[in-house]
Each structure stands twice: as C-alpha cells, then as structure tokens.
Image 1 (cartoon, rainbow, N blue to C red):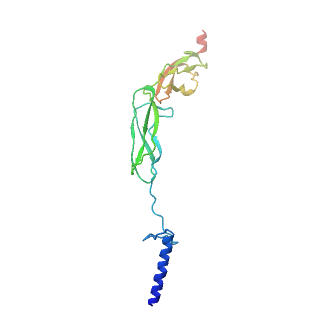
Image 2: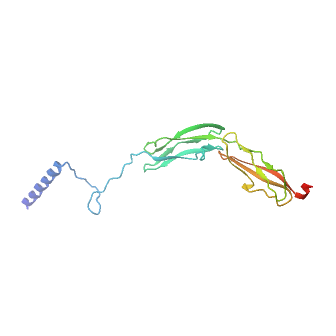
Image 3: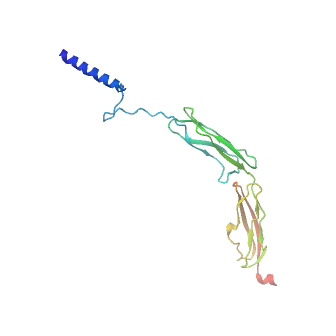
Length: 205
C-alpha cells in the first residue's frame, strides 16, 4: 500500500514538472462547461460609446423656426451611459450658421468622439401679397391666383393658391381663395384674394 502511494505521488510530481515546463498553470475553482472546457471570463468593455447622433436637431435644410433644445445620444456598449451633452438653440434670426459640438460619456468615463452640427435660425414668417388675374372674369372664364410670396431670410420653400387648383368661375359673384406659403425654416403664412365672376353678356353690354 505504501509503495502504491509513493508511486502516485511520483507520477503527480512528473505531471507538475511537465506543466511547468510548458508555462501552464492550473485554474483553481474555474467553472466548466458541460463538455469539460473552462468557461470564458466576463468580457471587459474598453471601447468608448459609439454611434453618436443629435436628437432635436434642425430641419433638413439646417434651420430652426422656434426655440428648441437638442442633445446627443449614443449606443450603450455595456458600460452604461453616464451623461450626454445638450443645449438650447440661440433663438435670434440669423443666416450665419452656428456650429455646436457634443458627446456622451459612459460609466467608466470614456467619451464618444465629438460630433457637431450647424444651424441657422429664422423665426419670422414669410409674407404674401396675392393677386387674382384678372380681378373681374366672365363666367366660365379663366382666372389665375398668384401668391407673390417673399421671405427675406431662409427663403420661400413652397407657395400656392387654392391648393394648386384653378379658381372656380362657374358661379356669378365674388369669390375668395386662400394662398399659402412656407419658408425653408418651416414658418407658414396665409392670405386671401378675391375676384368677381360676371355674366359675359352684361360685361359686353
């Protein structure tokens, strides 16, 4: 019995020397998978937040038309997002772009690469001076309503009268159509114009 014990100890010693020669060390108390492999340790996140973007930014043309707040958001890679920068729009009409930068920081203090955006501000609605041509039209004749919109800062994006449809001249009397304009910042304005439909025979007489 004693010889067997010494034999086991001698084999164990050889195994330890062999592992040491290979530069390997045993793992004490490491959990194993169902196949006997040592389970991987939890992954440590070392990458800063990514995918930084702005919420509450300007419209597609780069304009604000009203006071607003903006802030940066980012993807959480597992470290938790501690804070994100943000701010308020400078609500003063200006065609000169303002540029701001910001970032988000995760729980370990890692900041995403800064991202900036530029904006301009136009809080003044455009103006309309619509006219009907001609102002007096015979029944079943043709009249054209022209919005004549102007905008001194961001510029006119779209304008129309009567929803883009031809004004009605089937009925006699005074008719009114509404004209509409939107500037590039998103400001809206409306105005009306009237025209008179008369009997052709009376007009000729």
